[in-house]
Length: 413
Image (tube, rainbow, N blue to C red; front, side, top):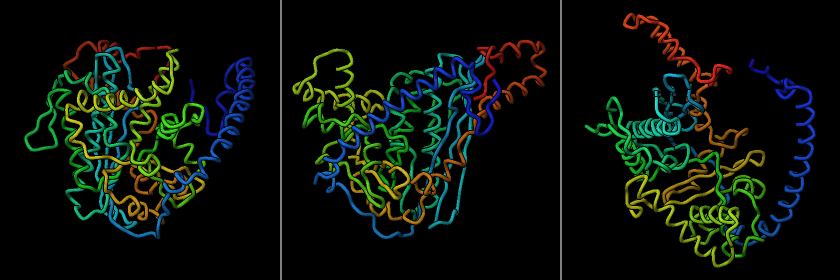
């Protein structure tokens, strides 16, 4: 199907009965959203006026300048799937800023192809991107050791969950590791390499993770544990804090949760809701038990996915930072003891008003993000190389190999 033009409503290209039906449902969804919004506004009044919430806020001081490294990566949003193979590409890069001036940058890109089930392929592609991201961050840091902070995109261990299912994969061609003489031959080798690179970044005491797509529900988890489900707000923390946080402020999970872990409260809340949806009994007693289950689940990720002792992980803390009332706050993850307020002051005069994020993160994201259609274009380039290869005499074999899995829809990923 041809891509709709800029500003054109793609719904209007559908058959009229479908358009009319969707517009009716849009009106119904608007009413549902209205009820949720009004209920949430009313529910948040008590929380916003509580001493617990107010004590979790700290005003950001005057802006200062410093030196930062920022690293980010990108990968195919979906693989290019052909009859013979699936293809994906990934990128990574770093930028180094002295104050507001860009003083250095570096970029990486590579590809991955796969003939086995797509679920494993997508996960391997994410790990390959994580490896490139960590490599970019460490190389920039060792080149510019006088930096105040290293900004990473996403949590430290965003790649960790489900790693256990690809430990046994063997790569056709060994991959050169980051460390001296390290060679990556298996999925387990790759996971360990990324794990160790991440730990090294954490040990610098300067790595600050900015989490843009925050889905945590630790506030509801805390309310559930202490007051019961009827007191829960039924929303993610980022939405709650977007409605409540003032501009130029930092909000601390540690203070709000009285030292509790946002990871545990979020996991416990999700386990509770999963139990409820399955029709199992949920009461005050089951909530207490789910806290222990949440801790076991988190330990399991480190033990079975990352193959390490959870006690070797430095204590982590999470915060929200907000510069502008017109943009939502963003979540940060740091090693305990990191001066988050000083970090926030660096971008008081150097954030993007449209996104509310530090400008360096937006700039590196723009530089490495793959435009839509990149993976398809890359796969076509691979096919073009083979068409001119004299070793393959039967060119129809190439055509068969690169035929779309679903020929009815032309791919554009």
